Figure: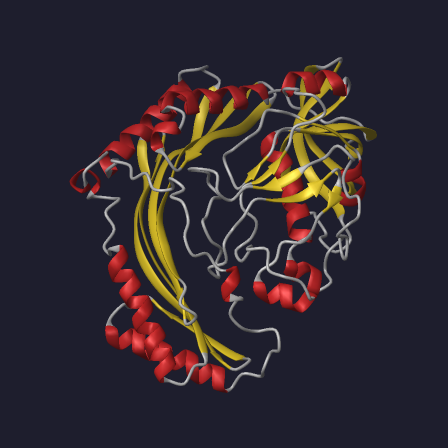
Length: 455
């Protein structure tokens, strides 16, 4: 356990939990004094450091130390909001008054209001989210240089760098409302990353690698990150186009999580009540193959998406999103739930630690390549060609052409296309190579067939 003096330069927070809680109570009192029938306040404070080194020289060095208070005040079914970065008593009072003035001039919304107090969290376990890192600027610069140097040392064809970066961030937030909810916690997030450029007679290619964790001791070491960035970059040398065709497509985990992200956005309450979802009113329908299972686990210790309660103080809970291929329900905060005539699912702020279960069997990446036989391995996606209303999907892509389960040559300047509804139904397998470096935890995803547009 590190003492506060060891983390003073970067990771020491300016406010204590008690001081943030006091400010929440102060703003709630001001809102009540101004006539608000209900109010919700969130106060946050963050500190951090980010360093980027390029070719051994410091490219950027940024410190972060910020704070913010946000208030939503309700006058019946009318509401107003205001925020401030000034934590003085006068500024907090003025911000509360501003939110109340706005609420008095806002049209009533029959769905507005605080969540049902019975849905809110009353106690919760420590989710192990706070791991301060003793990494002052000098140490961060040296780590970034080590990452980059390890990448350059792999092969003389690595001739340039887009930078090696070290980032560390620690935050604390408190949420309180006029119903009596009060809760807060500290959390951290640290990362190392590197992007390199290689050249051969055919031209230049770039790729990257990164590691991220709440706990710095669980990140990959700097040399591993640099070597991985170099190896990925070298693999892409000699990339070429392929002809247009229909073929199986295997998405590596980093790219597969984007497919799952399109799914969770489509089942969000906002997308449903605004009717801009390709999965509109799809609860109870079979969306994925019958073996498919996707669940939310918001209480995983030290996971990047974990939280004991949502952005409204509603308790988070494990839940099935997809069971036996069937959509079990939507991702709802209290407002969306009222709009849809349903109950909140504790998802103000989104779903947390969305996890796609591997199946069929317990197959790794190499086994999925063998199952695909001949097809396209996608390691990079370009552009934003996803229509969330129709499900039409068209993205620039790069990766590798695969034959007999083996990588044959790198591929670039192609487009992969389909419709997400069809793509979801055509998922043939999900690998056990689960990438936990984010809020969506997923292995490689093999799709039976997609259109690949090339030459």
